[in-house]
Image (tube, rainbow, N blue to C red; front, side, top):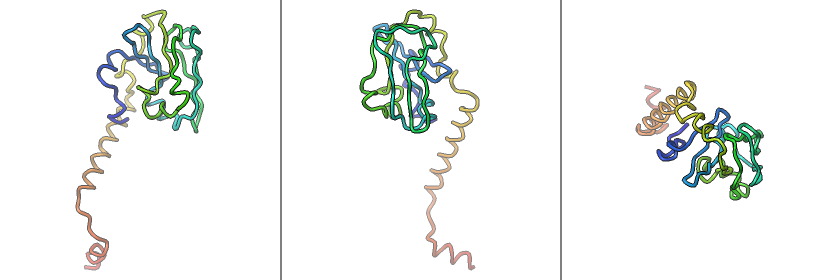
Length: 168
């Protein structure tokens, strides 16, 4: 978890998450954009293939709506809210690595017209997705980054001087 994976404030206010690591963002036109979280793409590794649902098809909440494949594994993409698929991200199909490089932006998967707004409200907010273990990991990464910065800021002693100091 890095600061670069945290969403922008506007994203956070209109975005919810599933326990299966999909995100859903409400758009101004009433549709909802769906993708996988930064955590999901980290766990998958390099994404090499995505299968997206057909526009016009309706799904119930938690139905399998697509597939994402990486060099390590394949995973189903579940419908986070019930509704009709109204658009898919053709750019993602052409370049699946967008799911890695910009999972909560250009790497979106599909858009859906929700059939039950209460389902969106019941999803997780950003804070609820941070388990105690992931918060602990984030703190450890921050400590490691500070230690690296401090180490890099210290003057380096040439190996000849180190050897001479050890002899004394």
